[in-house]
Image 1 (cartoon, rainbow, N blue to C red):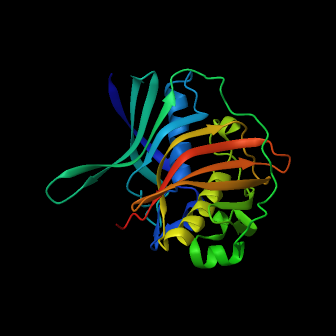
Image 2: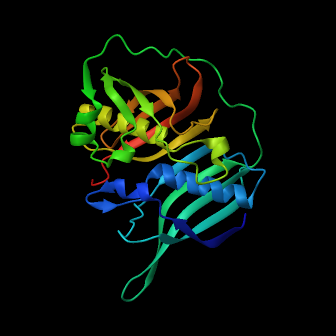
Image 3: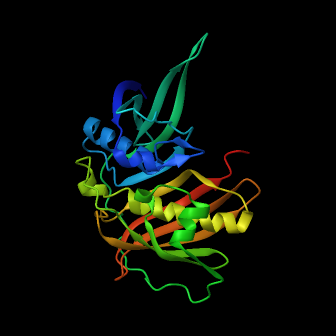
Length: 268
């Protein structure tokens, strides 16, 4: 196994400024995945970027308010269990030393696979709801992001172990050629918001995604289109909650699945 680090620039898009955590502008996890998928496709065109495995999110990559580009590093390693490993890193200088900070890591299959899930699923909302939260309240009180990340629509329905909601991808054009295959990042971001709300109701903590086992993109989500999401709790322990989530349309056609999504209170 060999690895190499490639200097790169991340173009700061206008909507990134709506993604603030603790008052700081931070690169969203879905944009980290999109950037790494695009970079991997440019280095290794045979890699199946529609399947992302053993994904891990590290330290937030902070974006200075006036920055147009971010200097970063992509670390690329091939032939790991017939997979390609790609990491997003940044290089910071302290007074007495330099440090490499890791922001995200993805493993991609080295060859195209034909096991993308294409089955239909039941699009109907749950009938055993215990609560519902309006999208306005959700983004005002629980997930306080700017308007361009208000992907969840109308209201989020909750049961004791599930969240169901409507998603709208904003009318933002694709930035990378690979998005013809993997789609808009916004629907998945909205599904993560649903998981955050469900997790907060179960733990009374503000949870952030720290990684997941596998994401499969069966169909690309499109700007301006409407989707549905169902998020289900699969495990809870004292440190984190684990979810599975689906993104689909009104006909039950599946667009994305994420299995083993881990969310945690990162302040602990």
